[in-house]
Structures are given as C-alpha cells and as structure tokens.
Length: 472
Image: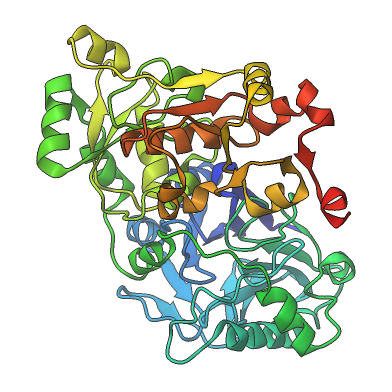
C-alpha cells in the first residue's frame, strides 16, 4: 500500500485533522486554522495538496480551509446541503474523488448537521479501508443532534432520526475491519460519551458504542438526546465564521502580537472595553495580577474554556502571559475565533509592577487548611466541576455551580461571607475565582489542587456524598 494517512491530533481541542497522501497528491480533512503543519508535510514529501475536505461547518473551532486553499490552489469540498460564502465544490452523495492511486467516496450522513458528510477511503484495489466521520460517529459516541435544530422546524429529535438513518444506511453497512477516524475525542463538547481513543475499527464500535447498539430508532433517539448539556456560547459564532471568509492566521497575529506598555494596555482597556486575559498558571496568577483580570491558564484546556467563559468571540482582549508564550496564546485564541486581540503586556506582570500600577491578589489555600476551616464551622463551598463529576461524588453541603454556567449563577455567591471554590485539580476553580473577583466578589478563596487533594484529608471519612450514600 503506497498511501499515507496521518492523524494530526490537537489535544487542547480534542480535535483530529487528517493528512492523506497517494502518489504525490494530498487531501487534508478538517484542518485547523494554522496551515503550516499541512503545508510543511506536503512540501517535505514533494506532494501537492489537491483537496481540502470538510465534514461539516465546525462549531468548536475555526477551520483553515479557505487560507489553505488560497495558498495551494486546492479545491474545498463539502457534502450536500452546504452553503458556504466562498468557492467550494459541493459534492453529491456517492460522488468519488480521485487522489493519486486511491479514491475518496462522499457519503452524505446528515444528523449532527444537515450537511454532515463522511469520507470513505477506498484503497488501490477499490476496497473500503477507512472512514473520516467528522462529528457523525465518534469513538464511543455519536455527534450531538441539537446544534442545527434552529434550521427551519427541525428538532433535536428530528436530527437524531436523520443521524440514525445515516449510521445504519451508510456507515454500519461497511465492513467491520474499516477504520473509523473521527473529528474529535474525549474532552470535546461535540458529544457526551467520547472515548480517549482517537480511532478504532467499525466492528469494535458496533460492539461497544452505546448508540450503535440501540435496539430501535426510538431507543436511539431517546439515548442520544438524553443528557445533552447546552453548547458553549461560541459554537454558533464559529459556525458563522466557517461559512464565510475570515482573516488568515497571519493577519490575526499581526494585530495580536503587538507589545504593549502598561499605559497602552490601560488605554485599550478603557477605550475599547477590553478584557484582560491572564494566561499564566493558576498558582502564579494568584500572587499578583492586573485588577479585574480573568485567569484561564495556557497549560490546560485553554481554548475551550475561553470559548465557554467569554461569550462573544469579537470581544476586545489584551493578554498577560509568560514571556515567550505570546505567539501560542494568540494562535490558540484564533483557533476558536477570538481574533480581536489588541496585544500583550510587554514584560508581563513584572513590567506592570515596575510601572507602579495597582496589583490584585487572590487567596488560595491548601486542601488541609480548607479541611480545618470546614471542621471549624459552616462555610460556603462551591463545586465548579461538571455535572457528572458532581454526581459521582461531592462534598456534603457544597453548592454545585458548573464553571461553564457560572455567569448565569452569580447571584448564588455572597458578597459578604467568604466563598470557597474548588474543582477537581485547581485549574477551573481559579478561572471561577478570577471571574468572581472581576465582578466585585472580593471574598473568594480558591482551594488549590481541588477535590483530589480534599479527598486525601481527614474529611474523607465524614463529609462526602456519593450515589450509594444518597440511595440510602
């Protein structure tokens, strides 16, 4: 076999793009916004990028399809029902695209969205080898059917019905040995039960994937639509961006990588209403930051949490970060459509302090100190983990306020009494604490290392609630 298939997986977005090469011709599937990795691979191999294949209009990241096509002359391909604002080939269901010595067959698989398409790769002998399923079929799950329900009179149940038909008529009829390459893995908000594995055989998925094992269409619809959390606010904005023409990443960087002195940063905050986004690690941030900053640490699920906590992708932003990380910050913001970055604080927080500007701090205590305070008397404890984490086990007497929906529950917090906040490991709790601090809640206390560390204290024998306890 002379074809080459490479999954280019970006962990912070739980996203898989694909590089397929045969006899000097290349197809890129679902590319991220930065085109460099694809161009470099093709150039190194002396190959030409012929197609940029999109499985659907993505909601959770901004694609690099337009920029990549402009740089290479490649044809952008979508499946039926797509309506982009740029030049693209809208393929017919069953249409075959030649790529070197192999063939890519277009399988229209609506359900996640109405233009959702799976690409079946036929090898040199015309035998089905693998499928690139986008958000139609994941490892352990299927795509959520609620994102496109605002189109016409479609409901999530209608879309789940289309998804069932797509899976049973187009995908599950393929040979069991076919490899499944999805667009996302565990951690993505595009599904609810995704595996940490990033590919599998179709036959194994038929055995273990709850959605593929549903005994009927009605059961499938019930199970797939049950328990879907509301999507992050930036999802529809990313869809709109992916349908239109957007600036290249180079253009975004030209603006976002401006080095700002403290007085320049202050001016932009005042004149543009810019948000100060501090991307340093939580335990570094707490010791000193620009007042009213929001902390979302770069060493974590940075871009998805930016998308969840800053509802408008067009909101003006100025960045405070570790020296040398500016390019990575602006790139990762651009991946999810946050292009309106005005620059970064040159010299970081040290330069801010040297200029004599006001510095704020946040109290962060150890799990042991938290346990002592909890035993000493009733305190307000807020758990900002996800619903499933809370359901599995939580502190008795705590209030659950999932970080994703924090902005809708600010009234639950006290501006008089102390608010103790924890997550699983300390990353999300500092995001929550910084947001509360920026909104005028100054009595916020972060529990460093979170629930995992709390469980190691002597609270573990007295203060935890889990399903078995609740059942009694």
